[in-house]
Amino acid sequence: MYHARVNRSDYSYPLPPERIAQSPLEVRSASRMLALDRETGAWADRGVRDLPQLLDPRDLLILNDTRVVAARLRGTKPSGGQVEVLLERACAEREALVQLRASKPIRPGLLIVTAGGSLEVLEREADLWRVRMPGPVLEFFDRWGEVPLPPYIQRAPEEWDRQRYQTVFAREPGAVAAPTASLHFDQALLEAIAVRGVETAFVTLHVGAGTFQPVRVEHIDEHVMHAERITVSARTCEAITRARSRGGRIVAVGTTVVRALESAALLAAQRGAAGIEPWSGETRLFIRPGFRFQVVEALLTNFHLPESTLLMLVCAFAGREAVLRAYRHAVAAQYRFFSYGDAMFLASGLAAAQPPGAR
Image 1 (cartoon, rainbow, N blue to C red):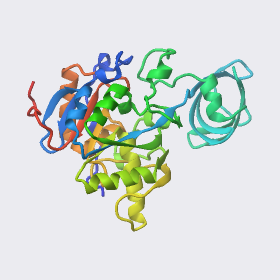
Image 2: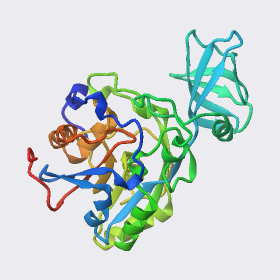
Image 3: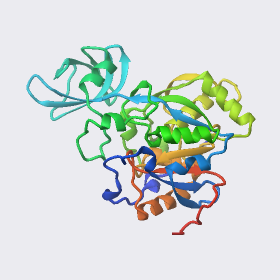
Image 4: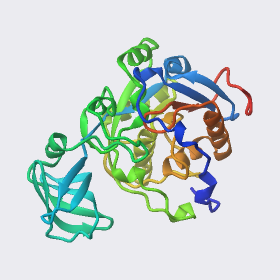
């Protein structure tokens, strides 16, 4: 599946800080969209509202219906020292794996006092801590926590972030970061896609805090991917089969959807099944150049951090040189980057694309 040894630095690109979006646009679907042809490397400057025109009525559009939890919590030690708690995932009704940040070392048995009650630190698990909560995990964080904005957004969360750092179709609570490509969808865009005749389906991938962890090794084949929980339903598998039978493409909205679908397909292949089968569990799939995509044929995604696993996935899908050339154009053309930023659509045979280097 994977071939040449690839370095983390191969996925670097210069990004001025002012290109990092700090707040969303007033209208979700008003974002710009860079359309990149996977075969030719040509691009065109478009808008997210152009997406229905780039879809065929035979296509299947797949979205992630995870719901973001207010996953960041402020607390104090009995000594008065400050502790930041960031939820990774719930393990049981009242137990969770979390990241803990404090000025002094954390030890098992510590009680962390919060506005909603005290958390007990149970034990360390790799780079995370298992804690016991004073109430059901997700309910507790949603009531007492705050929106876990990414570290590159240099401001405190506002009340409106609870609505805007959430998709309009979010329904399965459990994510601690938004599936950001889906943030561009509003009812008007969804209706335009439906009018086009395009079928939609959903998977669930609960994005973990590990999505923001940098790749620390130079040779990326040594990187260990964080685990995330996914569910690919029988209904979605049936929709994929229907789309393929009518000659349509499987269009993933976001890298989370790609990882969910390709994980399920790989597991089905290991069981000797053809195609994709329903599956629910944890995935650590690291998609990088050399990966053979079995399901996804087109991708809508945001612009990603330099040297990140998400950028590596996009490069695996459309070619490193073509993607990084398009990124350089996006920087020069003043696109907005990362979670609250603009989008990119990658597919084969895109019409009206400009040749590489065109203005």
